[in-house]
Amino acid sequence: MDRAEQRARLITARDAGRVGCRSCGLVAPLGQRRCTRCGAALQSRDTQSLQKVWAWWMAGLITYIPANIYPMLRSTELFRTTESTIVGGVVDLIHYGDYAVAAIVFVASIVIPIGKFGAIAWLALILGRPHAQDTHRLHRVYEVVEFIGRWSMIDVFVVAILSALVQFETFATINPGIAAISFAVSVIFTMLSAQSFDSRLIWDRLKEGTPA
Amino acid sequence: MSGRRQTIACPICDTMYQVDDEIAVRDTRCIRCGHRLTFGRRGAIARVVGLAMTSAILMGLAMFLPFLNLTSGRNTVSASLVEVVGGFADGLMVPLAFAVFGFILVLPLTRFVLLIFALGPVAAARPAFPGAALALRWAIVLKPWAMAEVFMIGVAVALIKLSGLATIGMGSAFWVLCAVVLITAYQETFMCRHTLWTELNSARA
Image 1 (cartoon, each protein chain N blue to C red):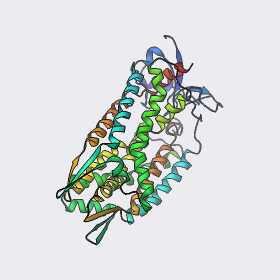
Image 2: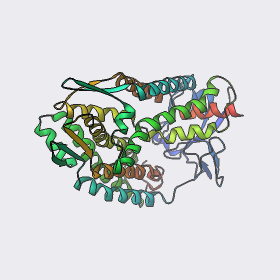
Image 3: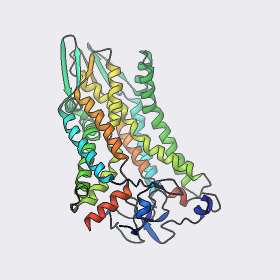
Image 4: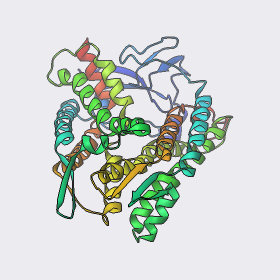
């Protein structure tokens, strides 16, 4: 039996009138509320999945705006206070010649969040109706988005460590700005958005006749 | 043990499989989406529990040992991880301090404790504690929210940013936390959900 033939014989738990546990994998009869093995709530398909995705996505986008407008860091040196935003911090690093660190911060705080907003919206739009996309590609995008989200927190941690360490100094202080909180909240919202996807939609919404 | 069959569904794409024990001791992947269904490593439970205990103990040490040493002029100050995170906890920034504290210390530590609680008795061939299933489920749910490794990159970036201002040395807790990150990554390679749940279930019955 070759792979294509093998694939054609696959049936899902829903096809078989049953429901698979997403936590431990055990299959239960349809209509059972909780998994007997791990106790997780059972749901054949999360029909509200895309609504949740969009809701968290919008919340994340809204909090991402103040995160970029307001200062991430407020540093005071001899009575002079300077404020720097996320982009400003990256520009400063380039100015001091720390190109590698500038690249890390740029990727973690700008490229990943914006890329993630785009990728989640793209997936949610495609999965909103029957699609003829390559399921493997959709699945890969979904996995990357889920994996990469937490790495955006780097900048929040940097701000935390900087402000804590510099408190031990006498001539300078660094305080986190309001953008640090907005950014942290934005990262949390987009992580929740990615987790709200019901990955089974990728295969459910495949148009008939498209090779899986 | 041979001949035991279980019906499982792929958590990613819902394809259903009949898995018997002979297959579950090997690596298996879902034919349709490629999700790993079983890692099939024998002794996975004992390793997960052992590594979680190691991490938990190291994490406890890392909290109170000096994390960073700051030298400017003739003054040297060392700050523990708790001091580093709690250092800016005033006014508006209290929620931020709580979040950072939770992500880098509380949640990773909680995961280790949950894993030890759920799987420790199984590894020791004793009946599982009541609530073990709930504990294991939460240990899996919390995984993306435990961010010790992200924090370590943040520390590296902060050190480079501060390098002009003062001389900063890494304290022992810094290296201990590095070890925790590596051990946790190694432990995750043994986290075969199918094996963990099957073993836990037979220890409960």
